[in-house]
Image 1 (cartoon, rainbow, N blue to C red):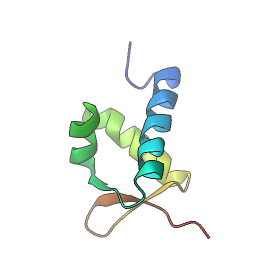
Image 2 (image 1 turned 45 degrees about the horizontal axis):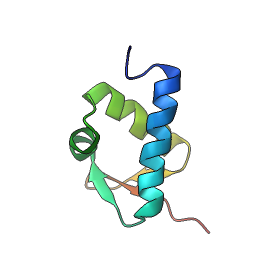
Image 3 (image 1 turned 45 degrees about the vertical axis):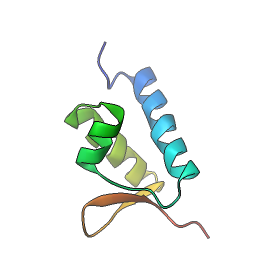
Length: 71
Protein backbone atom coordinates (compact mmCIF):
# COMPACT_ATOMS: atom_id res chain seq x y z
CA UNK A 1 0.00 0.00 0.00
CA UNK A 2 1.39 3.36 -1.01
CA UNK A 3 1.43 6.21 1.51
CA UNK A 4 -0.10 8.41 -1.18
CA UNK A 5 -3.15 6.23 -1.85
CA UNK A 6 -6.16 8.56 -1.74
CA UNK A 7 -7.75 7.16 1.45
CA UNK A 8 -4.46 7.10 3.35
CA UNK A 9 -3.51 10.53 2.05
CA UNK A 10 -6.80 11.94 3.34
CA UNK A 11 -6.00 10.51 6.79
CA UNK A 12 -2.56 12.16 6.74
CA UNK A 13 -4.02 15.47 5.60
CA UNK A 14 -6.52 15.40 8.47
CA UNK A 15 -3.83 14.49 11.00
CA UNK A 16 -1.35 17.19 9.94
CA UNK A 17 -4.10 19.80 9.68
CA UNK A 18 -5.35 18.87 13.17
CA UNK A 19 -1.84 19.28 14.62
CA UNK A 20 -1.58 22.77 13.15
CA UNK A 21 -5.07 23.59 14.50
CA UNK A 22 -4.10 22.37 17.98
CA UNK A 23 -0.78 24.21 17.90
CA UNK A 24 -1.34 27.39 15.86
CA UNK A 25 2.26 28.56 16.39
CA UNK A 26 3.68 25.31 14.98
CA UNK A 27 6.48 25.99 12.51
CA UNK A 28 7.95 22.91 10.82
CA UNK A 29 10.27 22.41 7.87
CA UNK A 30 9.73 19.71 5.27
CA UNK A 31 12.42 17.58 6.95
CA UNK A 32 10.81 18.03 10.36
CA UNK A 33 7.43 16.92 8.97
CA UNK A 34 9.11 13.79 7.60
CA UNK A 35 10.77 13.00 10.95
CA UNK A 36 7.78 13.87 13.13
CA UNK A 37 5.37 11.57 11.31
CA UNK A 38 7.82 9.07 9.80
CA UNK A 39 6.94 10.02 6.24
CA UNK A 40 8.99 9.66 3.10
CA UNK A 41 9.94 12.83 1.27
CA UNK A 42 7.38 12.40 -1.51
CA UNK A 43 4.47 11.86 0.88
CA UNK A 44 5.51 14.83 3.03
CA UNK A 45 5.73 17.01 -0.10
CA UNK A 46 2.27 15.91 -1.25
CA UNK A 47 0.75 16.66 2.15
CA UNK A 48 2.45 20.05 2.51
CA UNK A 49 1.72 21.20 -1.04
CA UNK A 50 -1.92 20.14 -0.70
CA UNK A 51 -2.32 22.03 2.58
CA UNK A 52 -0.61 25.10 1.09
CA UNK A 53 -2.74 25.06 -2.08
CA UNK A 54 -5.91 24.69 0.00
CA UNK A 55 -4.95 27.70 2.15
CA UNK A 56 -4.44 25.81 5.42
CA UNK A 57 -0.67 26.37 5.55
CA UNK A 58 1.76 28.79 4.04
CA UNK A 59 5.48 28.43 3.42
CA UNK A 60 7.68 30.97 5.16
CA UNK A 61 10.71 32.70 3.67
CA UNK A 62 12.87 30.40 5.78
CA UNK A 63 11.30 27.27 4.32
CA UNK A 64 9.03 26.37 7.20
CA UNK A 65 5.31 25.70 7.14
CA UNK A 66 2.92 27.60 9.39
CA UNK A 67 -0.82 27.83 9.74
CA UNK A 68 -2.35 30.64 7.70
CA UNK A 69 -3.97 33.46 9.62
CA UNK A 70 -7.72 33.47 9.28
CA UNK A 71 -9.74 36.67 9.44
